[in-house]
Figure (cartoon, rainbow, N blue to C red):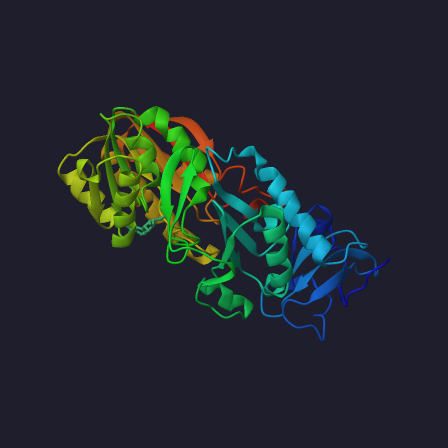
Length: 399
Ligand code: SAH
C-alpha cells in the first residue's frame, strides 16, 4: 500500500547529502517552504525533478526545516514504524549485562534514527526528552512502544530544556507520563551503585556518556591521589575510590546538591564520605589556588559542561578549554595522568588535541597520548552525520 504525505521540494542538487545518509534538510535547501503544514507535521521530500527522496517532519521555525525519519516510500510513520525503531535501539543495548550495568541511553536521537528524541534507562524507569515538534506529535505512539519493548515500569518526561523554545515548544515541568516514577532510583554501572534523581538532576539525572571513560580510569587510579573536576554526583570519583583503600579522591563541583549526592553515593558503595575530600567550588578558582599552594595530584579528570553551544561562541570556548587544561596540568605531578574532555559539539577532537598541545608547550612538558574516546556504544554516532558526535575524551600522560 503506498502512503502519501504533503510534499516539500528540494532545490536542484540538494538531494546529495540526503542520499549519503544525512538526516537534516536546512530551510535554504527547499524550493519553497511547504504550506499548510504545522510545526512537526509529516512531509515527503521530493527532488527538484519530483522524485521521492525521503520522509520526515517539518518545522517552519527552525533552520533545520526537515528531519528525516525514513527513506522507504512504503514506510508510513505510524505505530509500527515507531515500534520497529524502538526495537532496533533496544537490540543494540543487549551488549549490557543487566546485573553489571542497568543504566544506559536507550535512544540517542539521530544516532538511533529517531531525530529529536532522547531516552535514558535507569533500571526500570525511562527518562524521555523531546527536543522537536515532530517528536512531540509522535509522543503517544512512542510512549506505547517504549512500554511494550522495554517492560519499563514508569516513564518520566523531562521537557524542561530551554532549547525547546527554538522549536516553538513550551518548556514544561517534569511529569510522569506512564506508571510511577520514584524520587530516586538506584542504578548500577559496571557494578558501581549510584542514586539518580530523575526529577531534578541535571539533564536526565545522570551522565551516562562517561561510562566507558570511568571504567578506563580505574587502571590509572589505584592507590593514587586523584582529582575529579566537575564531579557532579561523583561518577569518576567513585570508580577511582573503589580501586583500593589507599586511593585518595578529591571531588570538585560548583553545585552543592551535586556534591551532597556524591557523598551519598560514596556511602551507598560502603565508603565513608568523610574519608574523602569534597569541595563546592568553581573549578577554575579551585585549580588556581591549588596550583599556588603547590598541590600535586597523580591523576586529574577535567569533564566540564559544554563551553560552546554554537559556532559563534567557539573561540571563547577554546580559550576556556585552554585555561582549564593549563591549570589542570599545573597540579599534575610529572608523569601524572590527565583525562580531559569536551562535550561541546562545535569543538572537535583536533581542537581538543590542539588545546592540549598549547598547554603542554607553555610548560615545556612532553605529553603522551594514551587513549581517545567518544561517548560509547549506547550513544551511537550516525556515520553520515559527524555532528551527532559531541563528546571527546583523551587520556594522556604529562611528563
Ligand atoms: N563528570 C560528571 C559529569 C559532569 S557534568 C559525571 O561523570 O557524572 C558538569 C558538571 O560541572 C556539573 O555537575 C556542573 O554542576 C559542574 N560545573 C559547571 N560549571 C562549573 C564550574 N565553573 N566549576 C565547577 N563545577 C562546574
